[in-house]
Image (cartoon, rainbow, N blue to C red; front, side, top):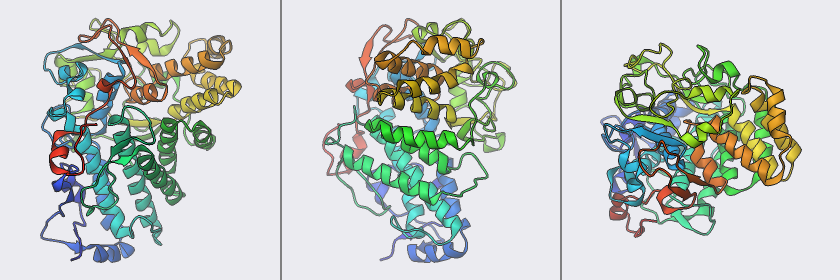
Length: 496
């Protein structure tokens, strides 16, 4: 019997799907088309598949996309808070509502029965299923659609599927070990339950999807920055190769992104405090990927802004404060504009980095400040990291100086004074240090910690586990496969 698929807004029906028996069930509706019929219709009307792909982007921002009603479950930015906390760079400095207490105490990551443990698994496999539902009517995994618009939709779907598998591989494996079995792979929405695949196979799927996406998205001129274009797919591939330790490819890809000149570096004025600060506006030129939130979307209390911004009517304002780790904040020298991003009596909250533009305490009710997923500065820092790890200190220094020149009040003078004396491991360490400062609160510190094999010691402003040192591959820093997956998937019998 032919598979049944919804052809409009299918992703909304899939938000709560996990990788279980429910994950494998076809969606029922009164208006159904077979895969073949849907594909034939899409050949003449790409809007049919566009609705599905747009629904995937919606999954990334809505609350409950991880299958719970918790107020820390709201898509990618919810995961970003968790990973920043796992890295130790984000401190919970005041706690009134307990949304993150169990998390920062490592109870969520070590106990596979806790409800929060299922959120990332459900969210990312929900994204994967939605991508598979978009790919099938476009011809399947090996097809290259003839219609240009359908090629672009296929490219977006493959890039988003790769993005989901990349984060699953980061969160549910302690480190990159090609022979370790870590995750089941699904490339079709009707696939039956699968056993865990090896790290090598998971990363092979990620790199294939992203390589295909880069080709398919060539020439795509997007109209909204929440859409994945060629540069974003390349950025995701750069992160993938970095996690694998293939820094020659990282350097090549990031050079290509930078050399397009499409995205300028974030300026000093866009970095902190000023009305032009670029962390609440998707129109900021350095942003490669982000989501333009408007009050019409109805996003409010349960959101990244609600959990992070004291100028939003929600938890950060009312009593759950998240701040930069005190030791990391103290490592930022005077004269570095990023030092001014963090202030306040409750442990250096990011009041001058992430803020509603009106700057009224508790003022933003329905969110209009935007979400950031990726900016070009990441590509500069990945490029510097790759060069340093390949032994090309000169190239690494040049890239790092380009970024830091825009961060110091004395510009290139201070940047050169800091960077030029460094070499070898000391240079690698400084690039990692600057990465933690530059992208604080953007969900990048955990990825950097893992690929740099770092150990982080929590500063004295953490309410819980202050002073505790945890290495990157400690079991407390990765999730267990959730209980519901062990119950529903006969091929998976262990938490790791």
